[in-house]
Image (cartoon, rainbow, N blue to C red; front, side):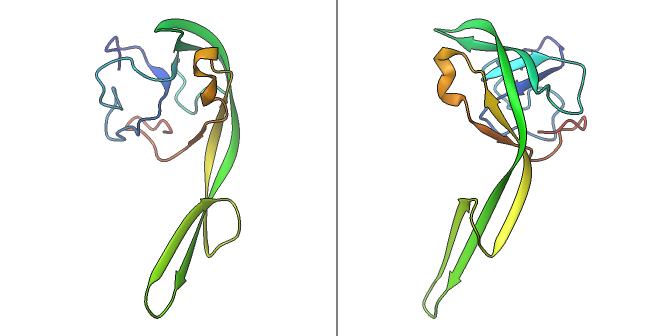
Length: 132
């Protein structure tokens, strides 16, 4: 994103392009929740100091926790003679379940505290094999 060639983990709400090796969100800028420079590509660090843009655009080092877990998406389909209804929700019992590896954010700066508890699901892998 920052076009400086430094490998980094990025926390963002934008879905990344899995076919790219850099600027995965296509924003051509450093506009995301947080980042941590790292050569390690197996998985993001779950504990450490991440750089976050807080309080009016000032970058700060924040001690961030990414708690590993799983999230479950349940899809229930009901069919009647006239229509088919599909309802999706997190958790619960239903006819189709899928479970994904996920990370829950904790430790966001005060300016972004509403993001604490945000769950990032592992969707795929990037062109270099890193999970996204």
